[in-house]
Length: 195
Image (cartoon, rainbow, N blue to C red; front, side):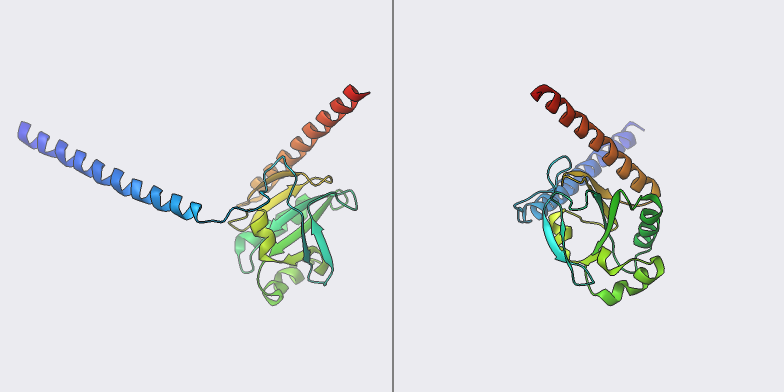
């Protein structure tokens, strides 16, 4: 009995060693993959200025994302993929949750306009509200789609993240509004101190 339990104990120890070695190889491979990504000049970090990117809309107009807003509205960037059920759901949720008078909703993707035609028609999205440019997603460090980024009217990135459901989009918007309120309070305190 003692020999059998010792044998099983050694088998468990050997299996644990094999698992640790395999995990360390995976971690090393992931670190090598992350290290291979070229560093960008501007990193999209919530709380800091958003990257300023100019890109054409489907209508052909050049639109600048980031930086101070010309119309005084915040921007919600929704990064979507055609033919993705989660992206279709995120578009529907974003249209339902946003107040278009206070927030400009922009849809960003990559690929051909024909791939997005059905989604545009179904949700009545204007050609001036969609940009198909992979560089914008790279500048905002967007990996998975659907994802969203919230930029205040002053050009500061308030929040960014993947959107798997309506609750996550609501949380991103609420987090962005809370950060905006904190930023406005700090600005008001600085103005009060300067007076």
